[in-house]
Image 1: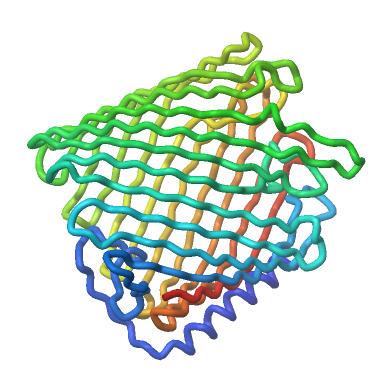
Image 2 (image 1 turned 60 degrees about the vertical axis):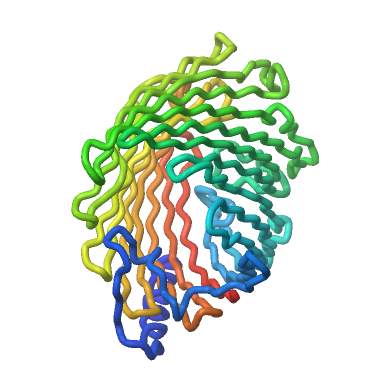
Length: 418
């Protein structure tokens, strides 16, 4: 009953919101491959603050949220109201060639009743590009993020407070194009560090055995069959190195793996475009007790600009993820999703999304099926003030006892920017 009431209130609020908008519907695309959400809007986009050859974009968001199952439990669900304040700043270069961007942001989250769930996350990062010549460049970036593990995660340590962790990242890349032939070479590193947490019983859950370094190397070659149609082949090598030789269960989770992909980048008259690939992946673990993860890999990321006012997107991914579940080496995640964005008025965009994920754990019989859906309305009052009203639904069905849950959230986001 609470869920139906939340949905009804969301629809009524969205209708009332639309009635207040003073602008007539109007849109004009600058490019056929520009989506509704990405389209430049000169009178509504943030202008930034010019400082020499840089533009500074400061912003602050406040999100007021109602969550009817904050602990993602099967029974005895608990609801709460949550306030999130998110200041951020991004600085972009405005050079004729080369590019540099630096950004920083934080999320300060406060629960009205369950204060132990409060947390503060942050992100710092910089990325850049050096243009060697017209069709040749190198890129690089560094990041540092503090995050928390969601209560819905199977790896949640069930502590008094959410599990906090930090990620340090480093990326580098090279791109070159010779006539119709392209080459991309990329390197990525992620260093994860999980904090210990205290349980409700007063014991301390050791998370040091989850700390790890992940390295990814990728080479991709492409050939332009004709303008807007490119075939490509890609090889990806992954190395995961845990800092502790054995985890608390006495298992060595270090692994190495590869993925081979073949696919195409497509563009049908600029209205339907995207990437499609299929391949094979394999991940071997140093510990003989952990089963090798291998199988078909696939990916689809397609966009259809149905009209200048409506964009449809669809996608599929199938990939291997890390897991700390006892007895499992990892999990295959297969996700399908679809979304629609419609520009009802020049400054009002309505959106809907629907997705499903199947997680298959290797080495144990666990399978999780998750369905996600959502509705949103984004109202751009002017270039400095945006409002977003959104409803999200998540339902998880697992063959593990007490791993099922259903969650409904409604939130209003207010964004001020320059």
